[in-house]
Length: 297
Image 1 (cartoon, rainbow, N blue to C red):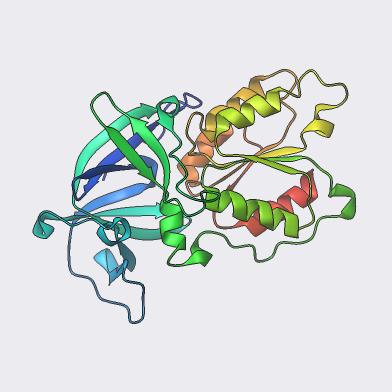
Image 2: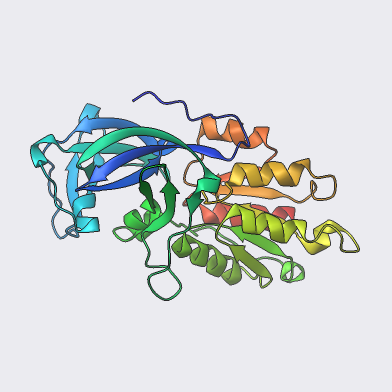
């Protein structure tokens, strides 16, 4: 599947592949999609969860397939015409079994709202955003959480992370990550490494409002905000736009911004560099991110 994922840097827009599971519309960032294929039988894997449909091997590549009908408790209208959306994120290939594909929608992150939390802290939610179109809404799914419910190691890998020097324990770290599940995991992993002055937000806009609120405080801005860890995909304001705002500001530009996203690849690294990101790390390698922070802040 051909797609142009490199929208102009910092425009706060994304392209969403709209697809159907049963009679409901859902969406995924087109940057995660590598191919759309007709459905084909899978090789089942013993003792796997029911949502894990099995594996198949197109062009000698083993791809695991998750059935979104079972994840979302939906029925397919015509299973003979179902499709597979083949994706690449978190440095892995995974297929999602869906009913149909409707097309690509270009949407501003400002038009994507956070879904209401159904319980507790929201970590059980499998949706990260609600995209508003003129005649309908598209639910943006948390694909990292869907995968993590089957294989947690595919989402966060803290192996190799070292403890921070005690002198850095109070360094002020700001996190922008829309997935409640991942937000909590990043905070806890940083805390385990010795950092205890962490504040987090579930979208780039709230993070920007907080960071920019430090502009008029006395002293070195790096004493106020030591670094920012940001996802790329977030409602209201994405990580690239957040980075651009920080780096274009005459007071805030020295704050290190580290992008930590499932979307990091060679093309997306170019986009991150164009908006001034200081470093970029692909999920699930949070151990590498923490070691970098230990050395550079």
